[in-house]
Image (cartoon, rainbow, N blue to C red; front, top):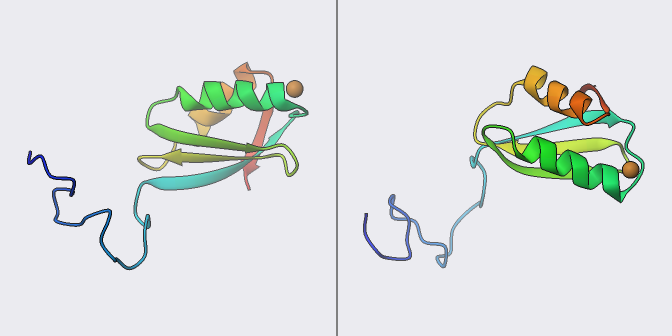
Length: 94
Ligand SMILES: [Cu+2]
């Protein structure tokens, strides 16, 4: 690989481009029950973040939603199992 600041396909982060971060993986939002405080948030962020392919987790306590960023379409069953094991309930995609 070259050692420039630019990516392999010739685009550069400092350039003036069109839309940014459009096809960088998949973002899926789930509805999760049982979350009440920052500890819940930290726990879910950790357990989901450890799953294969997951690149980011954003927990919103106010709406009871967990947004999962991943490199490919996530397996809902795997996410649900992790949430369940942490003591919460995944009720479906939001
Ligand atoms: Cu809590």
